[in-house]
Image (tube, rainbow, N blue to C red):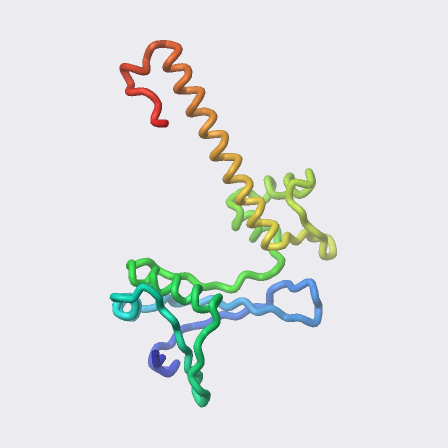
Amino acid sequence: MNLPPNDMHPIDVVSSDAYSPNPKEKMMTTTLTSPLEEDTLNQARAEAREILKNSEETTIELTVSGRESQQLGDALNQVIQHVLHALAQGQSIDVQVVPHDLTTTVAAQRIGISRPTLMKAIRSGDLPAHKVGSHFRIRTEDADAFRKELLKKTVTQKEQALKELWELEEEHGLVDALGGPAW
């Protein structure tokens, strides 16, 4: 696949330093401030459909300017295949770099809770965090694990509430009128 030179499709890129626990290591985050044009996205979707058409397995090769073409490793091949399948199905793709450590504000947004709730979780020991100066930082993996556990608890609570509701309906003879439990 040949990409057009950058001057053909200008995209504003904003880069900023991200926090890294190693002071010698600078991490950069990059955000596209102007999304791809709809025509470009539609063309990418059509190309993805064409590439995947009538193929059970796709192996991807990459050619970097001035170098010989080489086959991608299994892990990178899987990632790119995932992107191709999503595009072929008409989905949008958002690629972003995630820093190793998050501020409390960013972690709260990523988890889907308020910052005060996040701070309570840190103080109670439910969410691991470390201090950088006077500020807490949360490892991205810890924030994701905490979110996953919160979702699991929420699902369990909702399932229990639903079971209790069905039991109440059975107890009051409403099962026949309402149709009974779904499980």
